[in-house]
Length: 51
Image (cartoon, rainbow, N blue to C red; front, side, top):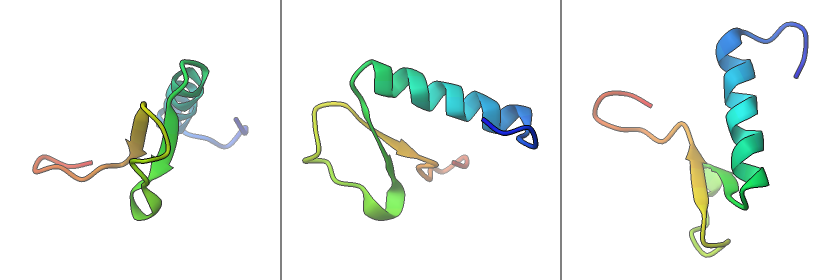
């Protein structure tokens, strides 16, 4: 966390940290690898209503 982060960025960092602590693999959409483990979380996955 840095001092110039928005509240949304801080929340995303906290969520990522909690997911990692629970054993999830956090990945970016452009480099996702579903074989990396059992718990995979994709950052900013596009949906019909937005990321």
